[in-house]
Amino acid sequence: MSVPRCSLLPSDEGYEVAFAGRSNSGKSSALNVLCGQKNLARTSRTPGRTQHLVVFNLDSQRRLMDLPGFGYAKVAKSLRSHWEQELPDYLETRKSLAGLVMLMDVRHPLKPQEEVLIEWCSSCDVSMLILINKSDKVSRGEGLNVLSKVNRRISESSDVISAQLFSATKHQGIESAWCTIEEWLFSSAENNPS
Ligand SMILES: Nc1nc2c(ncn2[C@@H]2O[C@H](COP(=O)(O)OP(=O)(O)OP(=O)(O)O)[C@@H](O)[C@H]2O)c(=O)[nH]1
Ligand SMILES: [Mg+2]
Image 1: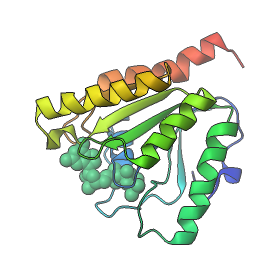
Image 2 (image 1 turned 120 degrees about the horizontal axis):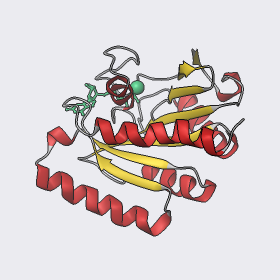
Image 3 (image 1 turned 135 degrees about the horizontal axis):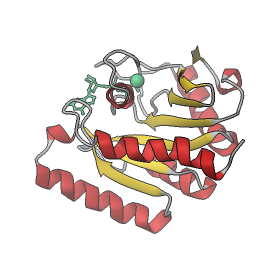
Image 4 (image 1 turned 30 degrees about the horizontal axis):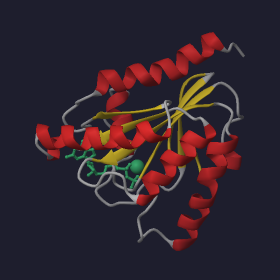
């Protein structure tokens, strides 16, 4: 299902994990590799490709969601401002949001909008997993440096945020990322039967 705004999402029940991040950070690619499918979510070299909220149902109670990217200047201003207004609302009000996966390009970590998202998640107490993506583009040492910088940053804010290196292209970090997502989708159900 693909919808242009939050009010058209499936009813706010069950458990949802959303993929957020700057345009071109690899949200759709990560969703595809995590689901073991090539073309589930549409990816593109052109930033700003995902303009709708795209919902993938795992079962009747659980879903993954590909959110529009933020921070890309060439996306029509009307669309940007619309989504940038809706995102905080979505984070604050969506009861079924079990966790947020934020994709971050290893070469451009902790940009202002990413800082804002970290702050939102910690203030709304929403669990967040930061996937430091495209780690195939840098050396292992550089990747680990970025990871420790991000870990230092998040340790100041929240204990519900964690980070790991990831590469959608080289299939790096998939198992541990999926472990976290699975825990959000399934153990929250055990702790909190609906
Ligand atoms: N080298 C490398 N390229 C990647 C990786 N992940 C994604 N890409 C590339 O980055 C580009 C953008 O990927 P998408 O998955 O479409 O990014 P997105 O965040 O969904 O982008 P929007 O929907 O426009 O916000 C594509 O050309 C991908 O092939 C990665 O781990 N390594
Ligand atoms: Mg996308």
